[in-house]
Length: 225
Image 1: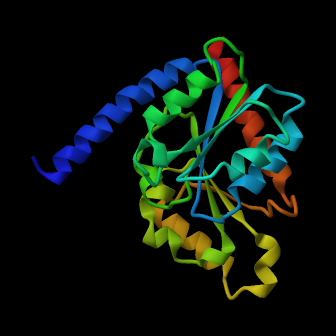
Image 2 (image 1 turned 90 degrees about the horizontal axis):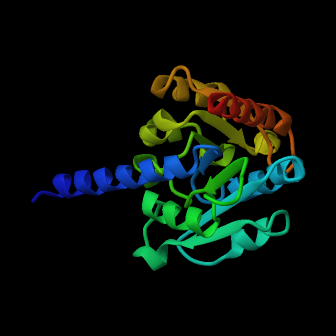
């Protein structure tokens, strides 16, 4: 059996479990946040939770190869947090549907009524793009410090994304980067990808991101009726 056949079999089984996750999440909006390491996912998540945790029932699934550092940060805002260490599942550089299924059951999504489940994927611009988890939306976070060429180097990640958040715009005066060139490179890969410039740490333009999140939640609730 070739490597391609093995990979196809892995993805097939993954998609089957993702379908189970989708059923578990039928009443819940599920967001998969992806980025390279250090792009600002956890900071974005912290400031998002500060705005929504008193209004909605939220659960968070944290993914890392090792450590529970991010989960500890998130537990300052909500109790329903599951840390997945992929080293326990073989040390993968991404979350897969099997891991999410395990986390959803730990969160007791079949008993508790969550409005939103947010997945913070392992920092990686390659593998997470291949694995459907049963989520409703994929959010890609790209730091300006990563340069203008990342969409061209890692096209699949941008192709599968539903929203691109261009983070750390507060650093723009100190960087040799042209945001017009960056956005044009994104459009070469996915012309209709919605993009927003934000600063997660400075909480700049986060209201635009929250508006999108609330609209997604509203549509999910309407679909349930």
